[in-house]
Length: 190
Image (cartoon, rainbow, N blue to C red; front, side):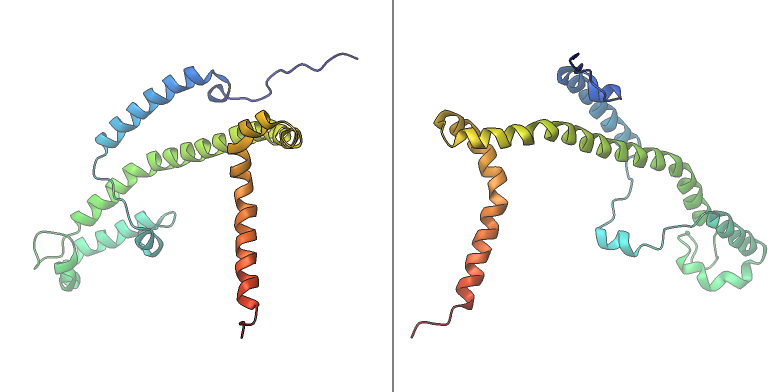
């Protein structure tokens, strides 16, 4: 029977280059990100609460509808004077549409790069999952074998100690919780 080839079936250059080469590329990418962050300095970072409750989520086509409202306001400014103090403009006596138009224009310019960054972040996340999965496919069966042999091999048990501590921690926590719950249910000693 012919032996199976250990050919790497993963695709994507970042998942197959050597860790040393990837480290160089990541360093260059981090420098690029720093430069991009400086280029777009002032991007807003909302709190989780503010993000959840933001009224800034615009539906498809909504910016055009908003521009139509602003056009109507420019055509009939007297109807909108009561909003002059809250239009983000410089004159509290006149309803100014330019600040809202500028916000919509800036938003339009950021939509595409925001989508690309989100897609890239998703690919980063997926790559982390794929790499973790590939590593776990090897390490979990190896851990199972090592745990059996560690019962009789003290050197292997010592080498395996960090992994045993890590993988054993959830079980130890469950046992502690169970003991506390059991003690809490015991009637007081009289």
